[in-house]
Image 1 (spheres, rainbow, N blue to C red):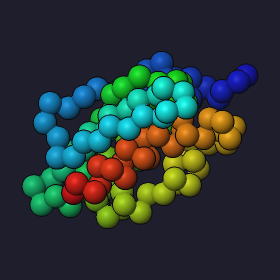
Image 2: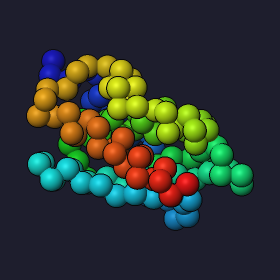
Image 3: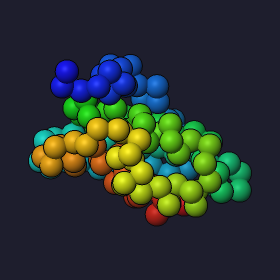
Image 4: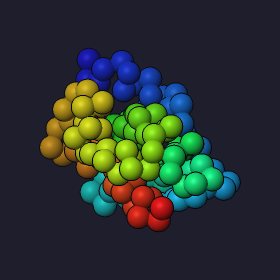
Length: 121
């Protein structure tokens, strides 16, 4: 099997895919090597200290879509500070299987979008 079942499921049926009409932070990034594109949306509580909803939209490969869904699930409900401390290595650990060097950018694209979102908060 090329990818583990969870990656396939999250690619086909992502739980947190969809743009937000209103968000407190939004960032779009692209992978120039393969053409993957993602927009990440954060909705915060009234004090701007806790992430209450995270969504993503965009077009990309299975790895990008699955890792974006994993990232959204991991940071939803966390504080902004916890999200700032959520590292690329944390995402890779949750992703589970090490991507090939050529696909690492695909898996980490959502993390790049998160970093850009958090600059706005």
